[in-house]
Image (cartoon, rainbow, N blue to C red; front, side):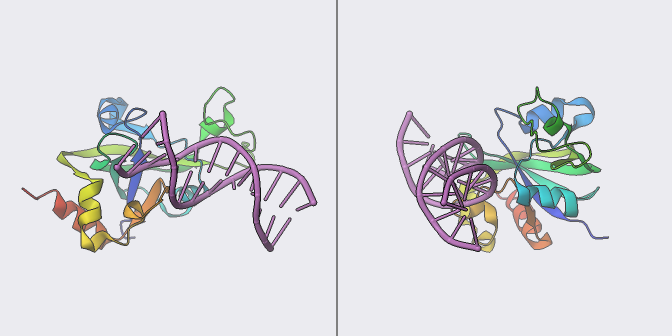
Length: 157
DNA sequence: GCCAACGTTGGC
DNA sequence: GCCAACGTTGGC
């Protein structure tokens, strides 16, 4: 089975890559995803050992800030079942769960984040949803080529 | 804080 | 099934 590559958005004032570094086992449940397209990627495509870029959104400098790895396969997002959770969804039940999560583990933090501006300026990345106008997808697949292209951008001076 | 773009809901 | 209204996302 080949490795899949992803990009995960997170708002750093809610959960940043530094929060992940400080978390137990440097791991976290990627819960709270409430978008069907993103849900389907979690449920149907993500698997252990896949790699993901960690992206900071809704912040002064939106950027890819590091890499995480999927370390636990798809499981039910329990926050949807908890009335006290801000992510509670009464339409999700244990018998018929609607929302799912994976667990990701910290791998690497970039010395210098790759900013959205830089990503937008790279002609080889014009096709990725992240840089497209109005894109709101919080989990998106990347080709191996996209992944390598972005990784190479960390080696710039 | 603004607002364009998007996804979801619900009336019909 | 259409589509207007609404709530949310997220760059700026």
